[in-house]
Amino acid sequence: MFDYIIIGAGSAGCVLANRLSENPAVKVLLLEAGPRDWHPFIHMPAGLSKLVNRKGVNWDYTTAAEPHLQHRSLWWPRGKVLGGSSSINAMCYIRGVPADYDDWAAQGATGWHWDNVLPYFRKSEGNSRGADALHGGDGPLSVSDLRYTNPLSQVFIDAAMQAGVPHNTDFNGPAQEGVGFYQVTQRDGARCSSAVAYLHPARERPNLTVHTGAQVSRITFDRRRASGVTYAMGGQSFHQPAAREVLLCGGAINSPQLLMLSGIGPADALRRLGIAVVQDAPSVGANLQDHLDICTLYKATQRITYDRISDIKVGFDYYLRGRRGPGSSNIAEAGGFARSALAPDARPDIQFHFVPAMLDDHGRNRLPGDGFTLHACFLRPRSRGRLSLASDRAGDKPRIEANYLGDEEGFDLRMMVECAKVSREILNQPALEPYRGAPLFPARNDLGDAELIEFIRAKAESVYHPIGTCRMGNDPGAVVDPALRVNGVEGLRVVDASVMPTLIGGNTNAPTIMIAERAADLVRAAGGIRAGSEA
Image (tube, rainbow, N blue to C red; front, top):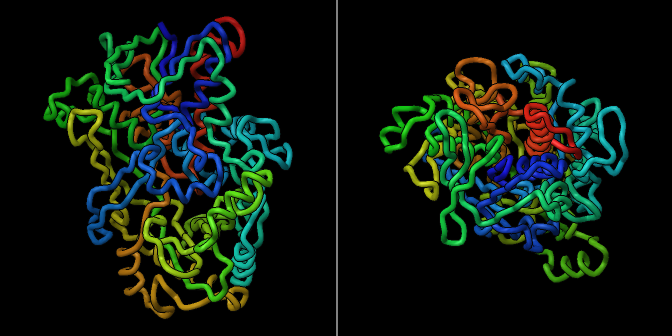
């Protein structure tokens, strides 16, 4: 029998598998629905553009028709592979700002304030610049400067500075505001996913078992204690008991889905699907949040973008010249953070990702010629959505209602208009004049607010940061307590981005890894286990 069963080998699950199996007396089973991370496009950073339509490593979710976005269904790619979304993302390493975590604590996530979480960020981080008071230098997650950047990315930085945004060489340093090049989760020019950082070094441990292609359908209970899981693998069904705990690491979509399939969720909705109720938990699937993103695109007058770059040359430079050249780029090389005129506090409230290529519909719609794209998102949306079951079958995708721009005050929409305006201001600075061609999206530079609103409703998309559907807190409506234990039952925790009470100011992968690092200590403390020694 295994002591711990971890469901999901994504950003959080790989961390837990490594940390819990450090003790040779503790037996750990890690179950992942997707395949091994064998594909070369996963490991070559620029290969992320080739993963867009590769459904074998992607859950390929879409939202329900979004009422405030012209009833469009938005695409939500999520990693279905060892490493999860850290194996298919753009690798930007961002932690947010201290006030984001102090807000969590103020909302009832006791113990998750900045002073509590910073040691775990530092523990996970192996920054190529070395360690200091805010950074780790020898953690398993390699963080580095990009080996290669497109010349246009520096031009964007110059343009943003001309627009009044300060230069910043470290978005995870003393101040977040500013523009510059992102540091990325890469090691020696290759992607450093959570699988590379945490799982691969632990794979040979005899007390760690990893199954891929294992679709979990239920968490089972003995009375009110999680007793194990049922899953399908290789055309067969299995039930595996857990001696200590079941640790659910499916992410903001799969974790609430599996809780509800297992009888933990809104009781009436579960009964309508014939699911036996273990715990009436109306908040499971609620509190869904995501960063909505608006892209401003221009044609380029010079052929220096990535739009028509030779795949053969990229591969040659990367594989035969020591992981060099454009193949080591994360594509979204430069960006940063700005504080708008509408910001309610001192934190930056807009994030930029600059792409020296034309990116429409997540890159799925290839546009002819050359151009560049500026992504801009509002960092702290007030809209809240919900995830619910479409059926009682684990193989059926849940219903995702993101409810973008659905806040009653209309603040999110005003902020998205601000994002579009600031993007236009930056891209029209003198630094970009030698490269800037005709505007593409939107097609004119002189749109008023009403026209920008229609543009946003027609073109805004997810920037892939869903969180909050298993919110942690100390109130009766919280799904998990501050130790990440599922309320109302025993032996079950949720460890992933779904537990975040609110979005942090930036990309969500680094915070998810931090959550898992801290959770490993919480689990070991509860079990009386010391790392690397006998239980």
